[in-house]
Structures are given as C-alpha cells and as structure tokens.
Amino acid sequence: MTVLYFAWLRERIGESEERVETSAATVADLVAELREREPRYALAFSDMRAVRVAVDQELADLDAPLAGAREVAFFPPMTGG
Figure 1 (cartoon, one colour):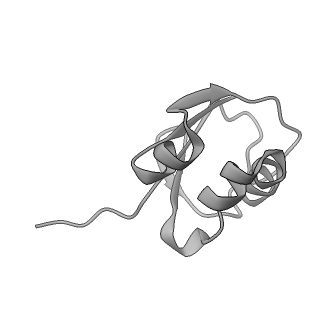
Figure 2: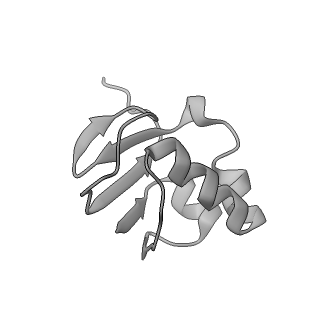
Figure 3: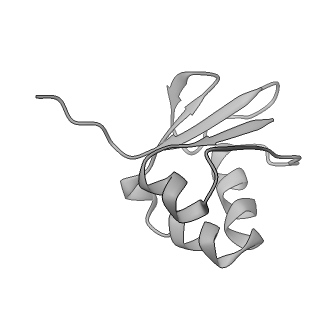
C-alpha cells in the first residue's frame, strides 16, 4: 500500500510517500509497525492525538480496517479560518 506523510510528519520521517508491505489489520496496527522501523518513525508517531489519518482519501479512526486499502495518509489536524 502507499503511505503518505504531510507537513511535520513528512519532515520528521524524511519522506512524502512510500510503498509499504504490511500485515496490519487496522490503522493502529500499521502505526505500531511503522514505529518499530526506525527512531524517526517513533518520533513522528509518538503522539497520535496530533495526527489525523485518511484511508483511501476518507477520514478514518485508528481502528479503521485496512483490508483492501490502497492508500493511507497521515497529517496534522487542520484548522479553518
């Protein structure tokens, strides 16, 4: 699946997108796998209250299933103005 990183997540990880082979069943499982990869991922995902996620371009929660998903995007909360 393709994993996309935006804003400060992209800066901390050093990638805007990557192809990930995963056995994760949910977004939370994927985050756990990514955290284990390297310290830069652990830092980026250290406070999930500051991270939003979209699965196949639809906003999702951490318990969202990944079966059949092609894309997961991580980004900070957006504010309006």
